[in-house]
Image (tube, rainbow, N blue to C red; front, side, top):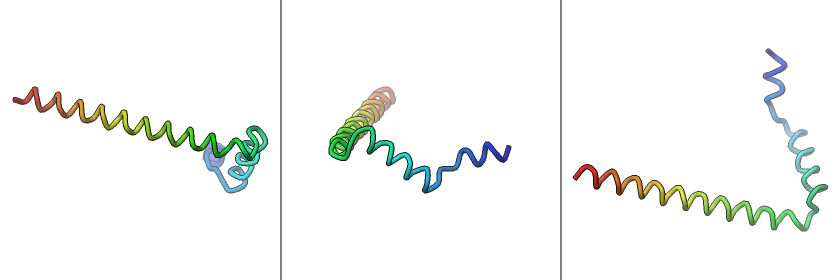
Length: 65
């Protein structure tokens, strides 16, 4: 049980290793482009969920009338 708890914790060394591997795989010049794409994807996802919420609210109000 204790092993499962320790395996779930991510410490600073694990984060450093993950960042190092990402830099090795993609290179330093490619990372800003990847982050920009990730940010745009998150922005589009948020926009789509907001539109879906607005659609649900509109349908709910039209059913109440």
